[in-house]
Image (tube, rainbow over all chains, first blue to last red; front, side):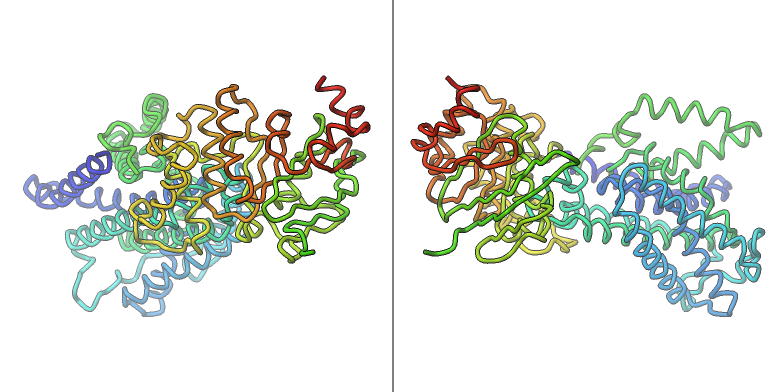
Length: 313
Length: 250
């Protein structure tokens, strides 16, 4: 029942997102294609964070690191003349997974506030590494020489084609995470989140499962980073700034921790509000802040909790 | 004579100046129910946590089925056949009763690096779980969220999870603690049905439960086992009466 309602909500969201480019074209507001593409890219990052936060109980305050690795992988390869998207994105995902393996191997031994601080510290290290890399623009960053190429099949310079590619990836990622959390693997990490002592007593060692979830999450977020730098066509170490990690975290919490549609809704709400409000006044954060506080106070289970079937799973 | 299923020799564990386990020797025969009793603060919990692998003894060895398991941690011991209930009920509260037991089945069904099939649709996990739930009398409550079960039912669920792992050794830490008399009677009846089929180490305050279930009883006082014997022997033991039964039980 609940999962059927949830699937209907997901399908409705998908249908709406499919309709954005033709609607925008009709209304001559192509800008919205751009905005929603950005929303979906951050939606992918937020879904990846929710996998470990909502289901594994790991509050990573450093997910921007994988956005950064994904973005740098694409840009650095492009800088050296390698524009093949398949290769670039494979390096982006693989590099992020390796980084997540290293960070996770250390940080998963801790929990609570220590976990938050360690993931934050690692990401800050990468941020300062990014700033110090003068070859790739250092503090200022650099223009992406060329967007990723896919044998002429998909042209990322075409806003609509790029949009539908991002949408397909988002849909695939949501489906993947949904299957993951309902599989034996997912049950094992959710059980460890629920009661680690009980898990150990029935013979689960939580560590390898949590680490695997952390690595998968990092890989997905790395893919989001590869998409992000293609979206902005500009690389900056700011992708890895701690405020970025905070934004992704906030998207998950606002949308609904441990829900399927939640993180995407959170990304949508945060980025669209930001866009609309900043059009009204340059002091938009003064309005956004209280709105978000209210949302968290009155929708305790996140925005997804307000939807039918939002808590399913 | 064959070696005991579980054999603890010279277990010592101190917390600062407190000797919570003081040179404990303990054994459990296959199929036996061996109870550990003792006044509050006697070190029963410390003892059982060392057996389960959640605490490491400062000295001493634990052998299980002929293998030295002293250095193995709790999950590794669980995979060798240890199963336990906790003094304070320890279940997955956000999951249904059936999910709880199915997770215990899953934990024993090899690794869980299976990423695609829905675990809740796997009959190999659900069917045995449902059977165990029915065995402990929770069959009708399978779909209820564990947090919403009555206290006694949660204790039963915990035992069900332990049984679902197909254990060779059950460590029950005060299984009837906090239960009403009806509930505790049902639990004792249920445990008595397991007797002989399961090897059980039972830590319990409820003397009625202990004396009706145990084949042997060990009495732990200030971290030391002062007596081990059949219920009759323990009842007759002068040290025990002075140190323990005399104070708590008339």
